[in-house]
Structure formats: C-alpha cells, structure tokens
Image 1: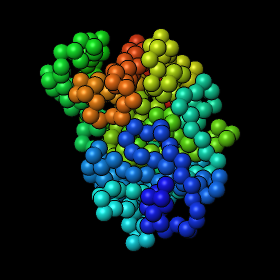
Image 2: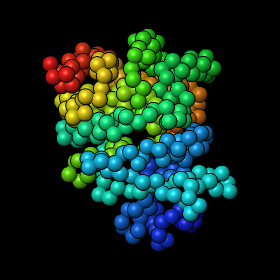
Image 3: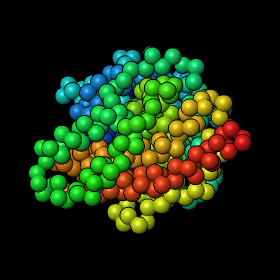
Length: 350
C-alpha cells in the first residue's frame, strides 16, 4: 500500500490519503482503483513491460488518441502527467506506471442477456470508430507486431506443437484437431481489401464502461490501440456480447450464440453505418469466427509452451480457455449466412 502511495505522489494529482483496490479483470497489467475515502478517482496501472516491450509507443498511441475520443455521446478519459510532465513514470527498478481518470458512476459487464446493453455496445464501438475515422492512421504505432495476424499465430502454434511435450499434445488433441480442420477458412480472408483503421483491438464487453442506466460511456483498456481492420473490433465484441457464458466457461454446452443480442449489437452499430465500406460489411461475419479462433490459438500455443504468456491460476487453464473460445468460433462458422443476412439488412437497409 505504501509503495502505491509513493508511486501516486509522482503524478500531478492532489495529495490525499488515497485507498487502493485491486482490479483483477485483466490478464496482463496490474491495475488498481484509487479512491478518496469511498469515492473512486483514478486508475493506477503497472504496465507489463515483458509483454509490452515497446511501452513508450503504447503510451504514445494512447496520448495521441485520447483527446479525439471526446463527444456528447462519448465520455472523455484523461492521461495524468507526472510531476515532470511525462505521460508515464519509470521507477529506479524499471517499473512503468501510469494514471488515468476514473469515469464516475460507471460499471462493466462481463456478459449480458440484456438487449439494451448489446445495442449500446454496438453504438459506442461505432462512435469510437466514427471519432477516429478521419485521423491519419499512419501516426499510430504498431506496439505488438502481428497482434491479430492469423498467419503469424498459426506459425507460432505450429512451432509450439513441434516442440511441446507429448503429454501436452495428448491433452490438447481436440483443440489441435479444431485448428487443423478450420485454419484454411481463416487464412483465406482478404485483409488487403479492407481499409486500415485506428482500432481498439480488444473490444470485449468488459472493456466498455456503462452508466447505471445502461448507457455505454466509452471504451477502456486502450493498450492495444493500433492500426488494424474493423473485423478485429467487430469480432471481438460479438464473441462476448452474443455469448451469454463467461469467457472462462469450462462447461462447453453452456456456450451459445444469441441471435437477438447480435441483432441488437448491429442496431447500435447502424447509427454510424456510413463509415463502413461495402467490403467491411461483407466480411464482418467472418470476423466473428476469426477473433475467438485467434484468442483460442494463442491460449493453446501458450498451453503447449507451458503457460509463458497469460496469467493462469491452474495448469490446464489455457487449454480450458482455448476450448471455450473454439466452441464459440465453431458456432460462428456455422452461422455465417445468418449473420451476413442480418448485417446486410440492417447496415444497407435492404
């Protein structure tokens, strides 16, 4: 606690007797809610520089984009400067810390069965892209090379499979078979036909802040802001909005695809439909299969490599993660035509 107080004193905020509450949703950074008595004020984070080796570029991107994410229907978040005017603090032990403003009266949902929350999630993601549509994407730096590159993730998986212990291969047989049976469908996506946008790249439902009356306020967890295609943000959102089961669900028969929630999400997105190209609209549905597959193959690769990347609380957790993700990806593959029809009807009005 005293260490956190010392860190906070390095930033340009009023010195008070702050309290700290650990936020455990994230898998990468260490995050703390900073409270004045019971009133939340700031988010304090220690950036995992083992993962985000280019942390200066990461913070550069956030610092560049945050001022643009400010509109009547989009809540502004500020990056607090250090006493020396820097957007982050690097300690003598090379830890990297940052502070951002907390959005008062906000909450998050890991999953939902609520049509209005699904619709609002679509609206705020569309608003995010609308606010950044005219921004020169070349100014934004790629902080995690190949983050959503399916070819790279497949190559990493093949290397991990080649070098894995035989027991790991046996334990992961179903997951490995799913990769082998479906990878070609994703390697054929024509990414070069899609416009490059400033993307959030991690638009799962619990990275959206909501008010107490279910109005979406803004996106959070902005470390992955980078160039990308809308397929990434679309697919990542749908995998956690149309599925009412939690991300870590191990009872695979509970994983589902709620078409009514998907339609509501598209209704929200429709408010900003004019920013999307016809090619994007045509390929959005495959993004719903791509993103859980990508997350799944990364978790599977990490399992085969003995859990080097993600935080795990038990040995088989990465394998459980990947099977949950692959189960939703399987549903999305089977619903391609249905999703295409909904997207075409709602975003083109035909």
